[in-house]
Image (cartoon, rainbow, N blue to C red; front, side, top):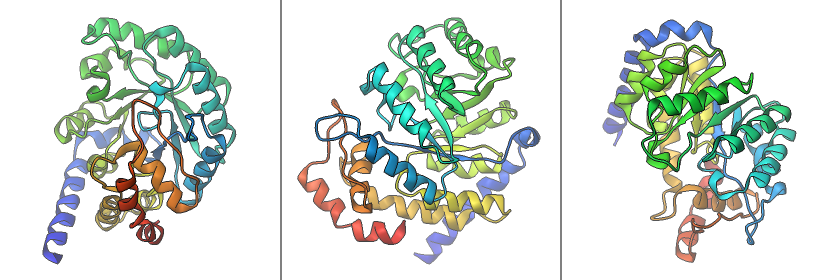
Length: 321
C-alpha cells in the first residue's frame, strides 16, 4: 500500500512539474494567485422550496473551512431546475452573505434574453464574476452563432466572464476556435473545464496562457495549479478544508502531492453506489450539523439504503473535515 502511495505522489509531482515547464506559465504574471471556488449545491426543503437558511449555513461552513469563493447555481447547484425568479432570489441570498468570499453566479440559460437578465442581476447585486453555460437546447450550433451569442454576453457587462465547458451536459463545446474569436474581449476571463479530459485540458493550458482555464474536476487540479490556474470543484462542498490545503501548499511553494492525496482519500467517503452528485452532498451536510436538504426532480434523493450507508460514514466525515 505504501509503495502504491509513493508511486501516486510521484506521478502527481511529475504532472505538476511538466505543466510548470509549459508555455502556459508565461501568462501567470498577469493573473492573481489561483483561487478555488466551491461548486455549491442549492439546498431545498422536502417540498422543493429553496431553503435560504440552510444556504446561509453552508456559506458560513465554506468560509470557516478556507474557501476562496463560491459558484452559485452551477450544475451541482441544479440551475436548470429553478425558474429565473428563483435563480434571482438564490443569487441574492448568496451575494448578501458572501462574507469576503469571491462569488461567481452561473447565468446561462437556453436563450439570450434570460441570460442577459440574470447577468444584469448578478452585476447589480455584487457578483465578482459570472459563469455562463452556452445555450444548451439546440445541439451543434455553428461556431459563428455561438461567437455572436457569447459576444453579446461579454458586451453586456464589465464583470469577468467565464464560459462553461461541459459538453457531457450541454452538448456544446467551448472550443479553441470559439475562444480565439472571443479573446479580444478584455473581460473574457477563461472557462470552467468540467470534462475531466487531461489531454484536452493540457492543450488549452498551452494555447490560452493568459486565460484562467479553471478545472472543474479534481483529476486536473495538479496541472491547473502548476500552470497558475484556479478551480471550481464539487468536492469542495464537504471537503473544503482538504481543497484549501492543496491550494495552501501551492501558495507556499510546497509539493501539493500529500495534500492532494488526502483530498482524494477523503472524497471516497461520499462514494455510495448510485448516490453521487447533489443528492449525496446534500445528505452528507446533515451529518455535519447543517439540516438535510433535497434535490429537485428529475433528480432523486438518496433512498433509505443509500442513506444508511452514508450515515455509517458520518463519524469519519466529522474527523476528516
